[in-house]
Image 1 (cartoon, helix red, strand yellow):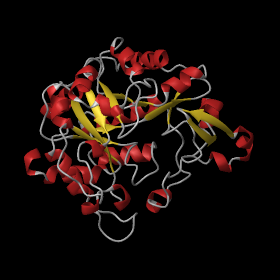
Image 2 (cartoon, rainbow, N blue to C red):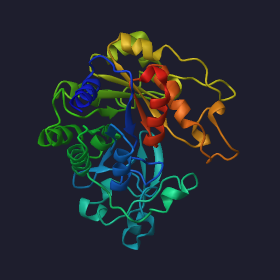
Image 3 (cartoon, rainbow, N blue to C red):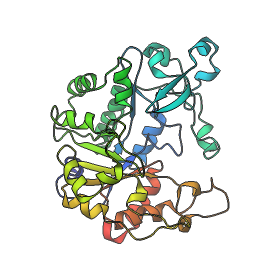
Length: 349
């Protein structure tokens, strides 16, 4: 048990890779329970997740809220709440005009009256059956869930918070970084051995955090476009050998879209692995891919089973392929299936 805890922490902070990728529960077991809820996180831990992920946005009164986006009509019952009807508005976030209800227009007390719902009900009706049961969580509540589970199970359950839209929030008078560092210090999560991986699609926040704390940092990398705070830089440039070396100056992890590691051809079938994992490891970076989902709509053609886009395909086999490709961790909505795929891969045992 002690060896397992030490090995998991070693992988978090960037020491030599172990054979089995870490399983990071993407917003919890979000394929089976509404995302970012206590039920989703507890199920993920029960299914063997090593890490649970909260996405972080801010409330009007500056509290870190656990939601996929600051627009919350897709993940809560806010649109059905007549007392909040007048809060509906349109905002431009990272260049995209979005209409709905936004966390920055609500206090924590108001947000706590809302209840979570499934974001993809057409794909996940079983999860949607749990709509309306769970309140919104704060970051410190997610950390408490991880710590309670660690004490209960004897395993170290880490957290992987993602800072969402920090440039946008700074522009509306809610800068994230100082408040986040203060929160990390209060929670004793600033050290190099802290059970945490901090993620962001933007570059500047991670660069600045690297100078203020020693906790592991992960640069998220999309399959197209570039960081909103660096209009002169593309994600494609960032995953070249030179770009990865520059990334390693401030980050411990490269976190690419899964199709950048196992690309797909014009027919949607997986081709051979790219050079990204090898290049990242050569630069001293760990690699975590996102996001493994079981539904056919999210799988390559050769992994699909059945006729419907919501039918489940061979996600476990797909997870094993990423393990074979040498990734150090995977984000997944289905931790049990990812664990099955990890165990099935002979090279990971």
